[in-house]
Each structure stands twice: as structure tokens, then as C-alpha cells.
Image 1 (spheres, rainbow, N blue to C red):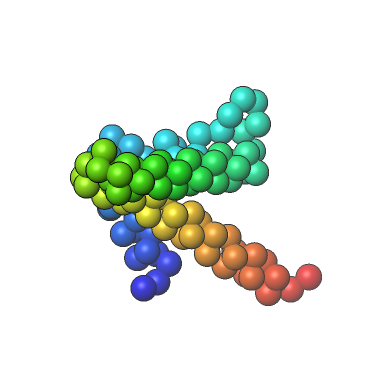
Image 2: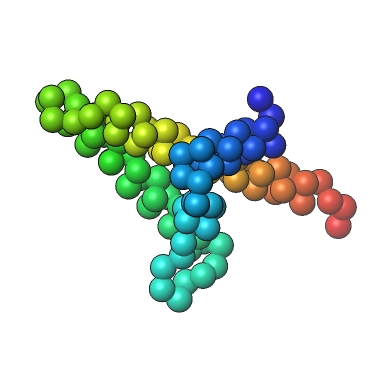
Length: 104
């Protein structure tokens, strides 16, 4: 699977799960820090939060207090977010490598 198709699959999965959500919902900067670093920090916080939510729902299911659909939805949300982050990371690495190949 190539990076563009991974990103396309991640965005398609996101649209199936949350039709009104977009990338801007995943990476909302906080406060006045609206730079690229703040965006990445916000995205990482969102990934960690979704991972904790998925773990909590799985534990509730194991204890007999949760619903399987909630667990599957939480895991799918986490997966889409991670796939999107990996696609962005791969694109950043590709851009860095291209810059390093430029003649000075």
C-alpha cells in the first residue's frame, strides 16, 4: 500500500465513521499557538486520548459492562487517526528527503 492510498483509505474510513468530521477536527490547535508544532502536538494528544478511550471501552466490555459496538467504534476511530498521522509523517519524511537532494 502506498502512502497516497493509505491516506485515501484513512480519510474514507473517517467519512464512514463520522461523516461531518474532517482533519480539522483531529488537529485543532489550542490557544494562540497555531503553528505546525502546535498542530502536531494537538494531533498527538488526540491520538493518546482516543487510545485511552478505546482501552477503557475494551475493559468495560471485558467486565461485562460495555457494548461491543462501542469498542469497535472506539478502536476504528483510533485506527483512522493513527493511519492519518502515519500518512502525514511519511509525507514529511518524503519532503525532507527531497529538500536534502536539492543542490545548493
